[in-house]
Image (cartoon, rainbow, N blue to C red; front, side):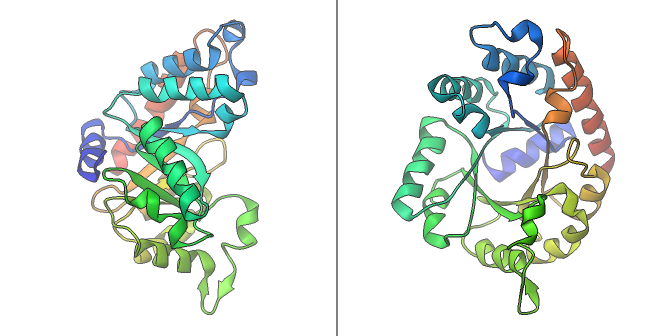
Length: 266
């Protein structure tokens, strides 16, 4: 998906919502527990219920990899079921030496046909270059995350800058606003104003709104740019908002709440 196509979908739906499909078998409604393809069936119903309200889906691959072959099959079926009008993110946090990254890029951009993948930049340019070489695919680089451990490295001072600021500036030179996004945790909304001075034009993927306590209002206030420039992800707050046979309808209501608030900020 191109930047232009993504922006068109945001304008059309008046939404920059990304629904996270962090689907755990243990958390599925009881009536699906015995279903032979429970994870995909759950995802299918969530997608059907929310596709008119969001512009993207983010699949956290760990929840699928943990189930071996069956999990990978459910992930592939889910990716293929998501409409082509929606931005498809593999939240895989890959990043390794060049020839290994080339295989990761092939796996997620060719075999599984995601539009984007999250990556860790710690190993430098040659660990990201193969992802960036794909046309109309996106590399989403970890910038400043919400977890407490972000203090260990990301928020260390290097000279008069935080390490994450150095990373954002350096990595932004490796790609363009057409193929490079950054992950900024929703609980770091106060830092978004200064982050936008470093990367004013890039899209930001913002996880952590909802169950993790991030504020959509604050994120939007400091993170929006002239093209919107945000994909705000909510996972548990949407997909697990209902626990019975009406779970998909509950997910729709939850997604609708986010979309209506986003409409006010655009």
